[in-house]
Image 1 (tube, helix red, strand yellow):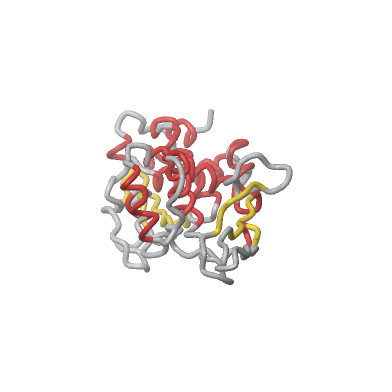
Image 2: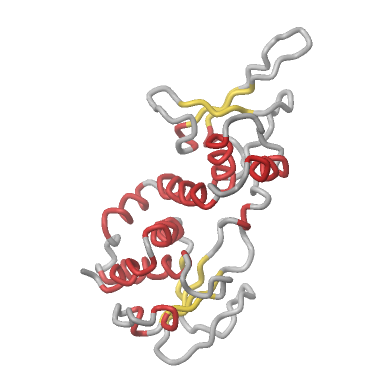
Length: 244
């Protein structure tokens, strides 16, 4: 078994999956000369000779998080003290998706530039599938939120508020990863997700989802606007950084 994959196992499945999504989106970049602070202003953990430093970009913009792997962790030998051997500039300091993303980059190297395992190959072939896995992970982190808390996030982003708690969970998680759904360009109403023909989930990948406006005017005529999910201009979801 490859060394980096063994260390990824220590981080747990959810963390490794979130890191895989970042890696497959091209968010990981190794610093060649590794200054103490990145060019984007993110504060790096202390460095020593032999360490490998990676910048991990956020899909929401801002300064990247900086990951430093000790030679032992990068080689898969520092399993006992992972916290000391893998450091990150984020608030979690090391046991995080950013470290996992850097380890996926190392895993790719170990396999001679071939994607590290079927999961990476699938993610590289379908970036939206990797984003859907991240959305599922975000949804799990939101399960303890109340209906009112979920609706608060949706109100901040002018999103549809109707639905059961599972529907609200999926709507918030979907917005956090793919962006807030815009209002109808014709009438300003909310756009409702529906499954494309041949798919079963009303909120799959954007390419599998059709959005329709159900608003009616004073004469009870339907607006009728519709658009494929991947054709919408989705803006950053306010509050997403709180549960990423």
